[in-house]
Image (cartoon, rainbow, N blue to C red; front, side, top):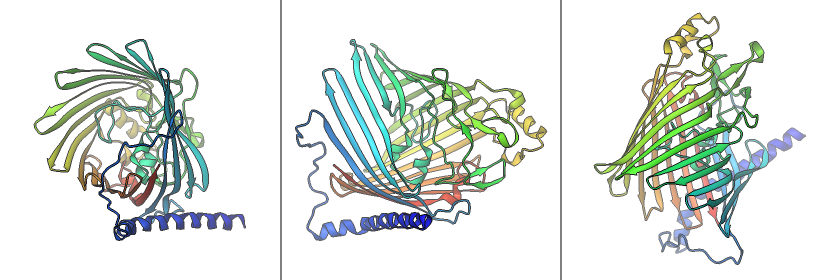
Length: 449
């Protein structure tokens, strides 16, 4: 009786999701028949006075995503079926600015209703040159477009790969940020008291390839996150400035690898945790020709690395990212990036695989892993209709990931989004190739208030 009721509730929620997505296709036509002008004068930024001492805004969003292929590792054809509501409150009092963003989610995949606090922070100046921001906040820096080297703040890859808004790729941190403005440079310092890991596919929405078992799985990865205060905190700094039109920055990070990989325990008690990491990097960006060119480098010093445990602890890495973005023709923007990861001490890793009686050398990482990305964005009707295609291709892994989407803004309040996450590759254990059976189409309807 309980199981049947749960399945019935799940089916009703999904039926509502699909009905809403169907409305996305007919909504514009109905608006046109009613005589509405979708391209009427923009009123972005025009707000009515609420009479409250703070501003209130938000949205309601219906989202659904469906697997395109049968995935035997998952029991569910849906990886996204949710009704999400956002409430945002912002304001200022004397020299203090504050903002709170909170989401409520009715989730048909997880069969739960939950709350998510995206932001709860206060900002205030200290003297004339220092600004402080304290609390839950979303942090980002670096030059990459959906590729990251020195941006080691937490990411939610599960949201990104299943069709939620790209806003949700950046996970929030509970942190203290200070920004000091000098005459020629700006210094940002971020302290996160307790490490915030990335959110990776864990089997509830997307399956992944388990190299220990040699197959696709939806089993949750047994992971132990560093969580002791203050020993397991993170420190990130950026020193940035300009020379003419050239933007320069240097970075330092002390914390942990965002992705779990260090094994602790033996046999059936094996768990994964996050190895300690010191990262050093730099970036440069400037206009060259018709577009913007950028370069970013980073060196990952794996503090816990030991040649005797080369398979269990991440190797040191050098990383490089080159990018160029320009408007090819009116309304069509084009961007390319080339990204490389270079494992250091690779011979020690090869020897460790050769000595192991359990490891399969087919799953040994490549010494060099490179990725080529391309972004195409075409906007028409005063940017109310935006077509986008973002692709990743790895020559080293021979796998790919494509993100097509179309976003249609009917009015200041109502918008539709349709898109997909399409994966493939020659091998089933590479980073993008492992998600081939998780390829999906998704749709979202959002109403802002």
